[in-house]
Amino acid sequence: MNSIDSVTLEVADPTAAARFYSDAFGLDRERVRLRPSDEPTSGFRGFTLSLVVSQPGDVDALHRAALDAGATRLKPAEKSLWGYGGVVQAPDGTIWQLVTSTKKNTGPVTRAIDEIVLLLGVEDVKATRQFYVERGLTVGKSFGGKYVEFKGDPGSVKLSLYKRKALGKVTGVSTEGSGSHRIALVSPAGPFTDPDGYVCEAPERKPDE
Image 1 (tube, helix red, strand yellow):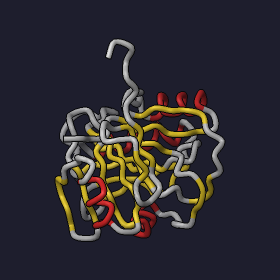
Image 2 (cartoon, helix red, strand yellow):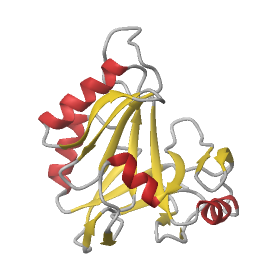
Image 3 (cartoon, one colour):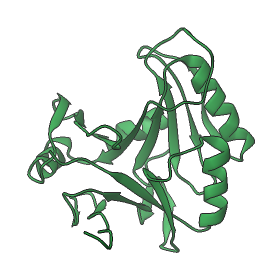
Image 4 (spheres, one colour):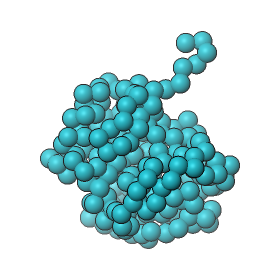
C-alpha cells in the first residue's frame, strides 16, 4: 500500500518558515519539509494541512503558539458539530487547521500532534480518487463525490480529498487563486502530477540504497 511519506512546502524564506514551524507547532521536519521557491502564486493555493490532536486544550495551545509566532487567525478555535478546531495561516501562506474530534479535555494540555492530514481541494473528487487508487493508494473512507480519505502507514501524512469550494468555506477564505500550489507530496507512488496540478515526487534514495 502506498501512502504519503511527507510533504514539502515551497516558501520564499525557508529559514523564517523553519523558525515559525518550530515555535508554533514543534513540527517533525521529516514529515513537513521546506525548500525555497519564487514560483508565482496568489490567493487560495487549494489545500490545507491539519494537525489532529487529542483534546480542545491542545488545539488552544497550538492556536496561541501559532498566533504568537506570527500566524494570521482565519477562524477562531471553537466547538462544531464534529468536534473543536480553528484555522490559521502561516506567514509563508500555508493554511493550517488545528482540530480534535472531542469536545472535552480529559488530561493535561500539551502540543502533542497525533496526526498530520493533507486535504487537497479538487474539482472532481471521484475522478481524483480513482487517479490515486490507480497509483497504489487505498481508500479508507469515502462519501461519494464529496470527500475521500486514504489509508496511510504509521507516521505518514494522511491524504484526503475535498471539493475545492467546500474547502474554502471550511477555512473561511475565497477559493479564488492562481499559480503554484507551493506544495509537493512525497510518496513511493511518484513521480506524477494529479488532475488538479498537485505534484508528487518519489522519495530521495539514500546513498547506500
